[in-house]
Image 1 (cartoon, rainbow, N blue to C red):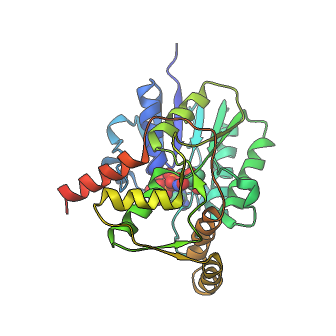
Image 2 (image 1 turned 180 degrees about the horizontal axis):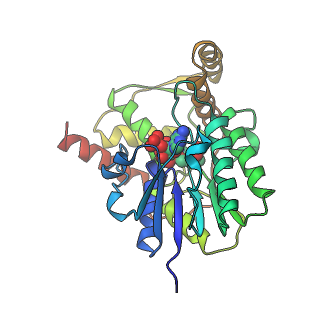
Image 3 (image 1 turned 90 degrees about the vertical axis):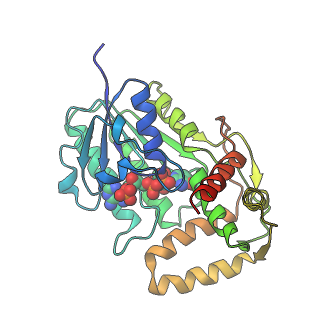
Length: 297
Ligand SMILES: NC(=O)c1ccc[n+]([C@@H]2O[C@H](COP(=O)([O-])OP(=O)(O)OC[C@H]3O[C@@H](n4cnc5c(N)ncnc54)[C@H](OP(=O)(O)O)[C@@H]3O)[C@@H](O)[C@H]2O)c1
């Protein structure tokens, strides 16, 4: 049988690297779409693997300039995209990257006869349509659904990389947490989610909601981060309205940061528990981060 070729957009990110690795291990030829090819050669900040050695081809393109995406999908059987704006970037909006960048990629995929498009959106998106980044994801989902292209939309809960932010905050010895911290989440490791993504390539399901094997309150999550660092948990709970007020003010001088904050605030204020899968546990992930930190202080 002919070897299948998959384009992975967002291949340099947390999830993208695990997906590249998973497809390569299953025998696919992987073309990585990235802005900065060098990134593929080093481990990422949340222990996501270097993947330069398993990538068959690198395609350099930027979602904000559709001309650079032209022919990214030439000769490809399938596209997987987790290309998205997750950190503030000067003068770049979620609409440009998450919606229009992926739309440009979809149009290129259609032009080149790609057989399937797999896209990563967000769990509980319908409850957060007033948040720019979520809206941009869902506008693309609508484009995908109406395109005629066979597709799967995967809707994960939080990634372990996001919980890595709690670890970074716990390192200072003190953490401010929005709300009472009682809302619950079942975050998922990139490798476990990559398994779901690669399985989706071989199935016909159009929508998949997914989270990790363990459900914790935010308080439990943060306490685990302090424990891994050998520190006593010191958490100050801040009312949700303080987050809203900070968001309102931030919006005046830094729209990009406000966009990222609005997603974090929304997620802090609700349960995000999706059908559970996977084998990797957050406690072990925090322990690995702590061990790495002790080795390279
Ligand atoms: N993190 C979560 O908890 C979570 C939960 C649900 C859904 N999601 C969604 O899942 C997707 C992946 O998340 P992640 O945590 O893996 O994000 P990530 O680590 O920030 O990776 C995002 C990827 O998109 C690329 N990208 C960003 N802007 C680009 C541009 N202008 N042109 C081309 N590529 C660009 C990044 O490239 P660079 O490496 O060059 O920056 C990176 O490869 C995102 O769409 C996110 O919204 C995330």
